[in-house]
Amino acid sequence: MRKIAVITGGGQGIGRAIALSFAQEGYGISIADIHQDKGLETIELLRPFTDDALFMKVDVSRKEEVEQWLEHTSVVMGSIDVLVNNAGIMHNTDVLELRADQFMRVVSVNLGGTFHCSQTAARIMKAQERGGAIINLSSTRAVMSEPNTEAYSASKGGISALTHAMAISLGGYGIRVNAISPGWIEVRDEGSFSHTEADKSQHPVGRVGRPEDVAAACLYLASDKAGFITGQNLTIDGGMTVKMMYAEE
Image 1 (cartoon, rainbow, N blue to C red):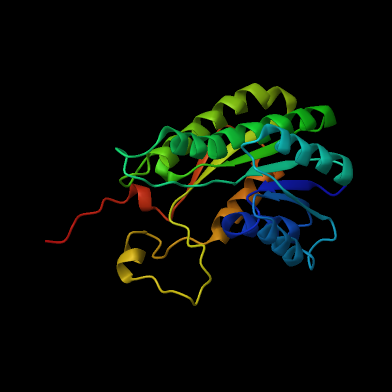
Image 2 (cartoon, rainbow, N blue to C red):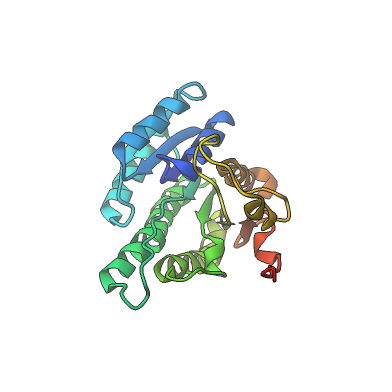
C-alpha cells in the first residue's frame, strides 16, 4: 500500500524540497500552504513523480482549516502515514517595539499550527491502527539567536518541547514524533547569488545548507530505519552551532 505524506508550507523552499523528496520515494503527497499559487506550482512539480498529489490552501493557525485539510486527505487518499510540520513565519522587530499581536501571530502559526496539525493527524493515525511518524521543523534559533528574533525563537523553542512531550503521549499508538532543527539553509535558487568564504567558513562542512539536506533527514526519520528513534531533535546545520567563532583582530 502506498504511504501518504502530508506537509505544511509545501509551496516553496524547504517544504517544496520535502514534498519532492517524498514523491520521488513513492509516497502520495498532500500539501498545505497559505499561498495558493505557490502550492499549485509544487503540485505541478510533483507530477513526474506521482499521480497522487493534493493541495489545499490552509492557514495552519486555524484549527478548523487544518482539520478540513487532513480529514479530506485521509478520505481521498486513504491514509496519513507521515506528517511534516514545516509551515512557519518570522516577524523580526525591535524587541522594545514588538506588539503583542505580532508576537502571538508568529507563535500561533509556528507553534499553534504544529500542535493543531499533530493532534489532528495523530487522531487519524490512531484510528488507522498502524502507527505513523510526525516530524516537526524547529530551528537552531531555539538555542542561539540574533537580535530581535524573540517571537520566532520562542516559537521554535516551543516546538522542540512539544516534540518530546507528544512523543511520550503518542508512543503507545505506534506514532513516533521527532524534530529537525535546521541552521542556515539557503532557499534562493542557485546561480542567483554566491556565498562568501566567510559564510562558508562558519560551517565545519565548508558550505551553507540546502533544502535537500533537510528533506533527506525527513525521509530518514519517516522510514522504518528510524523505528527506534522518537522524541529527538536532529540538528542539520553543518556543525555551525558547535563551532566557536572569534572576531579577527
